[in-house]
Image 1 (spheres, rainbow, N blue to C red):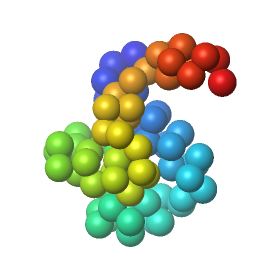
Image 2: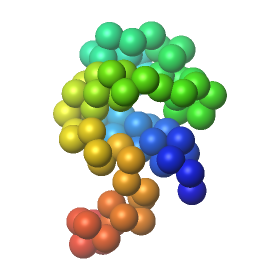
Image 3: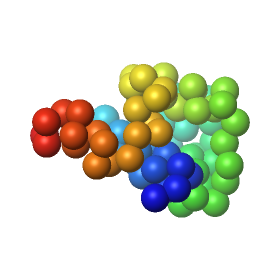
Image 4: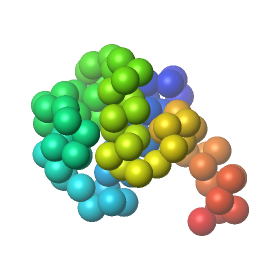
Length: 79
């Protein structure tokens, strides 16, 4: 899995865990809903400052957005 796919999957996963719609995540991060959608669909590249805005809105450490799902599972003991 490439880094863009990993990032897109993690954005969607953590957004859903928080119970956020794309619109709510966009509002909390100061970005546009269509931009969030394009990121999740792997249609847009993203600047590092926007990565930080999304991580802050999701209340996660920035680096976890770049960890593949199987690595997240190993780190949490399979939970």
